[in-house]
Amino acid sequence: MMEADKLSSISTVWKELLAFMSDSGRYQNLLEGFLIIFFGLLVVNLLLKLFDIVIKSNKLSAHQILIRKGIKYFFNGVVVIYGLRKFGIDLKVLLGAAGVFTVALGFASQTSASNLISGLFLLAEKPFSVGDHISVYDVDGIVVSIDLFSTRIRTFNNILIRIPNENLMKTQIFNNTYFPIRRIDAKIPISKNEDLKKVEAVLLTVAENSLDCLDEQRPLFMINGISSDHVDIQFSFWVETENFLDGRNRMYMDILAAFKENNIIIPYQHRVILAQGDVGGERIL
Image (cartoon, rainbow, N blue to C red; front, side, top):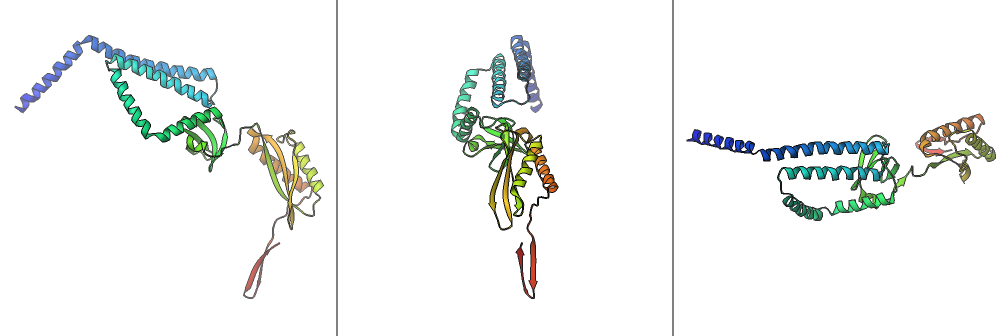
């Protein structure tokens, strides 16, 4: 009996398969659906590549990224929906189920909605763009992407950090590359015995001879305070933002070389340990 049942089941499946294959119209619709989806997605991919060629830039702005994603999702959706119609799938039922799912998802994703709204505000306000160097919380790095729900930052030790847009809207953001020039404040202790006019002249000469230091804004020499053993000075100069690190390093090296050449002393603390019998102590000179 069991063998007979198996043979009967195999025979039934085979008959249904033959009936399906004999239905040329249905088979043709399935084939058309597969072809529409395959070639349609291929065309959308070519459109995205054409979009990248038109803007002629590897560094996409936040709005360009959103436009690119909008093109991708919209046309992919149109292609898939049209292909499903060829399969004979009732899209009304599918859309109805999607509507119910969307409502349920909306109640369960209030945080996502908040991130979405915050992302739209960030895109409208534009406190930073892709490629900017920003500091937020204890994160310091380059903005990789600005999405609707989160922003991705690559730190300088090559770690990717994702920050929800809602958090960015609630905190301070330091954009270090927003403006084309930046000021560097070199704070230097100088011996009280030094001629401060001479120190100022040496620093200004270093700035004039430097290719990194800008003429506008002009360098600024300030005295921040006087302590028991030295004078605190500040020499502020401007460099191009894209040249910030290299310009700062070269200027510091030039300042040290100029101080050495002009016998300008940068004092340092001496720590002396005193000991007598069982009594000890230390004093800073």
